[in-house]
Length: 344
Image: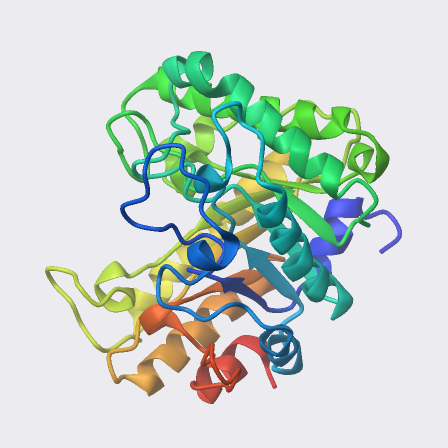
């Protein structure tokens, strides 16, 4: 459609997405404060091998057309907030492989936010870390200033308040601080020049949640380049099925109640997207392997079909028991789920 915004066109081009989890977002355990960790040491800290171009090509060949590239920066910043050049080079290399394969690429600031992160939803954190956050995004934006619009910048991942409340927070000030982080991000990227003046940006709700309160509290930042923001939430419902370790865990999925839960979710997200006149992606979803392949396939197929019907693409979270690819051989290890996601 010719009247689509740039963000809508990019989202419309995504049929199936995939997360490169626990690689560039991994962190070396036991590192000293302000220790600059070498790229390979960080990337392999959570038991994955270094990312290969062969893996990225295998993801494309399997039918995925977007990759979310989670990146944690904390162990690659000096005390002045300057990013290690070797780390920036590695991020640029992997992002370049994704783009060269014709896929959209979402680069973010990942475990720097969320549980135990240095970025939290509170005014105190703006006072302490605001300049560090602005400086980090300025460095990222300047490094990718000449990269085209298939590269999306994502502000941060699953930001929480100071008490690490998930889904929603009881503190109005936390919502306000969260929205302020989004504004800072947008203003910083736009100020960086080059392609960043029209860079497509992705911003999450508080904790990437989607309760009615959380969606209502979200504020889209004013942007001098209109139509270039993608909304994002995450979902692992029903958690008793999607996660391995829950109090009331179960192996099966399906039936009217399970389907209604997903339909209610995608309906509410479609309304939220329309309210802000901005497209939306479910940036993370998936289910852990409990030796229940058929149920996982049903869940993946229904989830993505429900979201896609409402113009919402989904990006599978891949790592550990969520993994669809063997990171060493780049072989697909759950072809049925991949087919459910991609339609191939």
